[in-house]
Image 1 (spheres, rainbow, N blue to C red):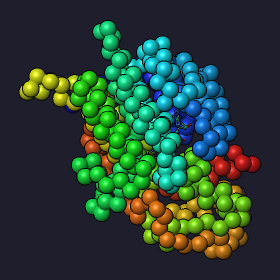
Image 2 (tube, helix red, strand yellow; image 1 turned 90 degrees about the vertical axis):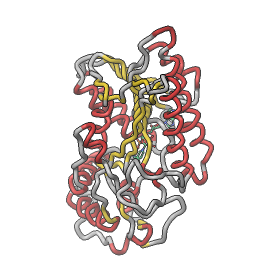
Image 3 (spheres, rainbow, N blue to C red; image 1 turned 180 degrees about the horizontal axis):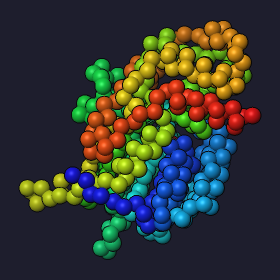
Amino acid sequence: MKQHIDLNNKTILVTGSPGFIGANLVMRLLSTLTGGTVISFDSMNDYYDPKLKEYRLGLINAAAEKSKVKHVFIQGNLADKELVDEVFSMYKPSIVVNLAAQAGVRYSIDHPDVYIESNIIGFFNILEACRHSYDGGESGVEHLVYASSSSVYGGNKKVPFSVEDKVDNPVSLYAATKKSNELLAHSYSKLYNIPSTGLRFFTVYGPAGRPDMFYFSATNKLARGEKIQIFYYGDMKRDFTYIDDIVEGIIRVMQGAPEKRIGDDGLPVPPYSIYNIGGGTPENLLEYVKVLQEELVRSGVLKPDYDFEGHRELVGMQAGDVPVTYADSRGLEEDYGFKPSIDIRTGLRRFCEWYKEYYR
Ligand SMILES: NC(=O)c1ccc[n+]([C@@H]2O[C@H](COP(=O)([O-])OP(=O)(O)OC[C@H]3O[C@@H](n4cnc5c(N)ncnc54)[C@H](O)[C@@H]3O)[C@@H](O)[C@H]2O)c1
């Protein structure tokens, strides 16, 4: 059972905005809610071009001007406990969406420290702040929603991936930190009765997305006349999820918190849930590349006679990567009545059109 939450007139903290998913979520909140406060919290780090984050912040500010909702941007590090506590005591958020994290599977191989700092210490600080939000009888945080990842499934062979599957064999430190988030959240839900929902996102893409992700970095390389590498000889399958579907999924979930209940032992049954959010139709990487190429030509990023064959190279598997991701998102559909539906042609078209305009 879910506890319904009306997001209007609430204070909502979104960490990792203006990151890719966070910025899109905040813009949707600003355009749909009729009142309240939305706080964006982000370190604006330079893992990828910070200009893209500035650009997204510009879009958020423009949306805020037209909105009935107040928007506050705080630049800071989640690992800074004092700052996180200060934000919670000053604004008293009732809904927290934790999207700030060091993302990327491959980067974690050479840069482990930042994953521990942002994804473990940062997340711990959020949990602690949620716990203390109830101090002195305050109503506190009604729902903590946080980003997990399809990478927790590692090299699992059974598809589609279900939240019931065993996920104890991460193949990257990134995946290990995301699985740790789920474990930490479970213990905090049990001990302090904090309603929490973890969302395992599956390869999210779209306009102004992350330049470290394949569709974006491949586009950059092709536009510069460089060769792209297609891993695992193109035999990979990915469950691509368009950004609007992810945002819709997050907003639905924010409005339904796991219900607080007391168990037979007189202690709280942890108000804790995990869901997959994925397109549900995994695409072969080569098919995805084919659609991307067609859309790059259609949008005018590349010329119709572009020599795609001469600009691609099929290579083996990379460390930390997995051959397939495939989401079983039935839980989301059953509990929140929502199923991602935007196909890769539509999604890549919007990305290519945005790319053409942005880099004009
Ligand atoms: N995009 C995907 O395909 C995908 C898939 C699975 C999971 N996720 C998860 O979803 C969340 C959002 O991902 P995204 O694609 O929007 O990534 P993103 O990198 O665009 O956004 C994350 C933001 O968090 C900020 N950040 C990082 N460390 C921070 C810290 N210590 N303190 C404050 N801010 C910090 C970054 O500056 C960035 O703007 C992340 O938790 C990511 O792991 C994303």
